[in-house]
Length: 297
Image (tube, rainbow, N blue to C red; front, side, top):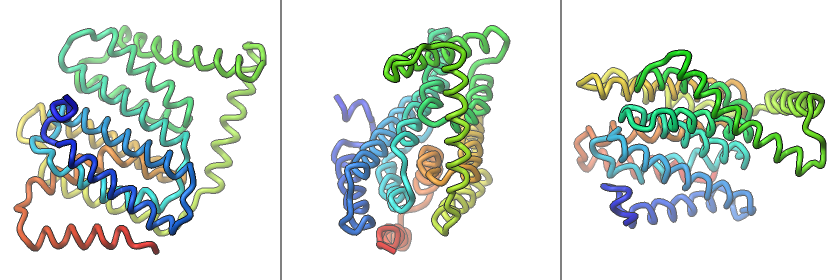
């Protein structure tokens, strides 16, 4: 059933890519692997499986047999950079919201889907307040795949508010404080302080910027070469481009941004690879990139 669920990408490929990613993490961490590292790997694999579902369910790629290769290439960058468990978890919930946006084109259960979009986005923002920037992607995605009006915005807000209230009640209960105006103000103040502290500690090292620059080059190549031959493909690719630009904004704000580039990176890289003729030179080039990517420096 799981093989059928992920269609072209077979279970052995997923297992192999996961093991290789684990090996890359162990090499890059130089034996100093913590429990948080394994949690980060689990989050990455979860994001990967969810990405596979979105890709296969919505026919974003005609041929996705190279997606596991994308996981291996991405993991070499991902494990070099600082990771935050809350940010990794927030990305998984963000992808759940993105998944519901893609499903709007079927015109079924629209109200429920719009509610879910807002609901998952609110949970994502709870784990990482910076994710509110993706509201741009959310609103434009709804417009591209369905339509936008005041009623639709209210349904989106309704889902967002329900999740927010549930999370505030949970936070109030676990902290043994009364849920009132002062509690909400204090919660917002703490969130703003955390954002400022994160921005102040942002690391502008080589890997922080190199992957973002590489992704930009990849997207430029993709945009000119494989943007789509029909309206449906172009809408999907335009939405992916906006999602990528939204993700790129986070490069300027936080250090642990790499996970946010995963889905657009995966789709773009695999689209390019699948369009190229896989001759010996290209295969050797990919192998060389993997080896360099896995080297602990």
